[in-house]
Image (cartoon, rainbow, N blue to C red; front, side, top):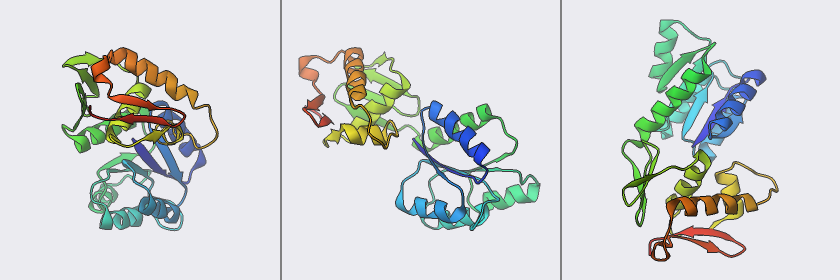
Length: 221
């Protein structure tokens, strides 16, 4: 899941970015409303964390601008604005949630999870005998639950979402690992070997194929 953090206080940005990356989220940041608006027009985010008092375009106006074209992406205000009237203004502008500073990081993470669950509903992905319940974060093979790590889960979801399309190792590093610089792509092969081993894929269940020197493709047989 890709989260946009819109905040101009560097300390808070660093705190949120580090903590949410450790939770397994892909993070992009913007320190003013104009930059954030440009990013929302050129990128697809799964959730936006938005401060109210930011330069150029304030959070309230930015929220309204985003909602003109995007009614679905969850927006959570993180702000020191704490009167009832200000909370109502934020929600009327299109925010889904409102957390007052200072806030508990643990509470924020739980709120984020709730919005992702609400958005995905009962969405499931499938690949042959493999099924993934996104709302419950469960992987099943022949109706038997398979325990994957967070990163293994994200990689499998990514391949299935791109079913029928070759995913290069560099694309995977960028989209799943959030790595945009030269890096050893061999780490992906290590995770893929672990996934295949845990799924115990038989010859007739060769749903994920290796494209030599390129990457991987998930496909129905």
